[in-house]
Amino acid sequence: MKRAGLLLAAAAALGLAAGAQAADKLKVGFVYVGPIGDHGWTYRHDVGRLAVAKALGDKVETTYVESVSEGADAERVIRQLASTGHGLIFTTSFGFMNPTVKVAKKFPKVKFEHCSGFKRAPNVSTYLARFYEGRTISGLIAGKMTKSNVIGYIASFPIPEVVRGINAFTLALREVNPKAEVKVVWVNTWYDPGKEGDAAKALIDQGADVILQHTDSPAPAQIAQQRGVWAVGQASDMTKFAPKSHLTAIIDDWNSYYVARTKAVLDGTWKSEDVWGGLNTGMIAMAAYNPAIPKDVVALAKQAEADIKSGKRHPFQGPVRNQAGKVVIAEGKTADDGMLLSMDWYVEGVQGKLPGK
Image 1 (cartoon, rainbow, N blue to C red):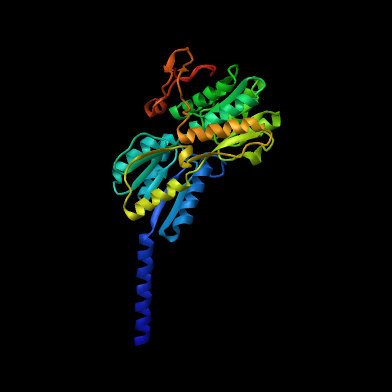
Image 2: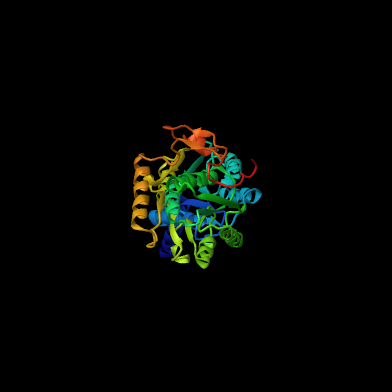
């Protein structure tokens, strides 16, 4: 009986220890606007989630919810994660901003990280990458590679993040090729391979021989290859989907940020802040350049990357004119973050009107 009692006591102690260990684990939740297999935006965020799991092992437990609609559905999902013991929640799309802030008010002990928004609170932090820096490099390449001088740009939603990408690209494009112009098709979705593919076809039919995208599937690159034109990928290296046509891509790298912020919650140093990292922080990088790109064009791209990293070059260096020809950034000046974060106008060289203007 004594031996049985000791075994029971030992088992109980082990059970308590296991329970304590489970309770000590930080549950980290991720809310995605697209599927993890989109090979673009959401895929790269999930690569970051996996980096957290690998780096922190049994200190964390990660979960994710994919293909969450922006709006009421997002609020429901975020609340569900907060109410089921998640101590840190990453919400990874602009349209998740208001739902994130709303839920955060009701769960003050939970830490929230919102990607691409501007609303913060004591328990809500914001972060984003300076994708427009990569658009500058893409613009230089496109300007050298186009023969038709028509570039097609597939855009998701008319928010400042997308608009400044179009503008940064166009400024660099026309720096090396003043005759080139950009045609934009707004698809009003982040991920819809059918719509993205149809937009690419429409732009190619209008003479575009380079296709850019601020959407998340590889469909535009695949269509570009089928039609014999160039493409630039989005968020991840899409070379395997269109090896002949894929010029390069802007790769989003959230790994270090996600690991660092999770560690900060674990060690009690987390605080609300705003992070906007670029090429110099490793938050974005350029994918390998297509071997078909001439060596002098690759050299031009690499020099621009080095200059942006060092601060020698800014994607929005004056003089910059809007579509109406008015100088909006004077010579010798550069756009500050306030202008970049609120950008709602096109530069010269972009055709058509910005939706809502």
